[in-house]
Image 1 (tube, rainbow, N blue to C red):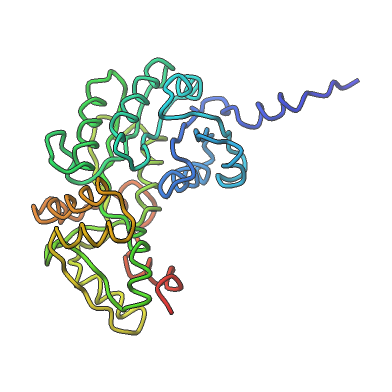
Image 2 (cartoon, rainbow, N blue to C red; image 1 turned 135 degrees about the horizontal axis):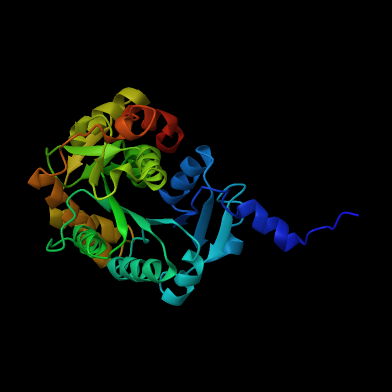
Length: 307
């Protein structure tokens, strides 16, 4: 006579890693990058545990066959429980004034929980001594990770193509794209390509102890981005450059908080310094495909920019 297992046992068997495979823990699994990391890991038939603040709210948003557990970056004790049994952690906290503090808490929890490696998503220009919020926050966590005793790989991302969607209303309504770093070029990257690099680093420790920079195929000025928009959308999209002060006022007028507006303006200084202009072959080297172009991304999302 067969003995039926309980529903709990069935769920556990479906989410426990197969023999020889480590459990991959993904923070922010419902976010722009996190959900793409989950998708890339599942495409490689890897076990995934998604750590989210509200598992009920995340149901159906992270895909099938994913273990979803509660973990709050502002409640470190919950992270220890969420991380226990995991082998490698994808580390990225939400954009917030306390981003560095949350990621440092996650590192402490990872060490207590027995996690062996951490893949930290960082950004071009990361520096603990930087003036800008984002660069400084990422730089502080990078430095802490290197001395944490955990295995690590740092993946610095270029500017996300998805950030263009924040300008969709202005492009759609006024045929205008507003920027604030003049004619300085910056490398961009498809979030899916960046996530694929992170996922590969989680599965393959070959890049342990390395700082990688993932970009798309080109560094572009904002005017060049507008030229690509114009070509894809078949109408002229003009570039308007604002001073840092003007751009900060534009953001706050659109509802951004003052700290976020200042942080965005500081990214312009990163671009002007020249460190964001280098194009790398990281995506092609670590994945099975060349990086997606910005034109391809705009074409795929053209409905967002079309009247």
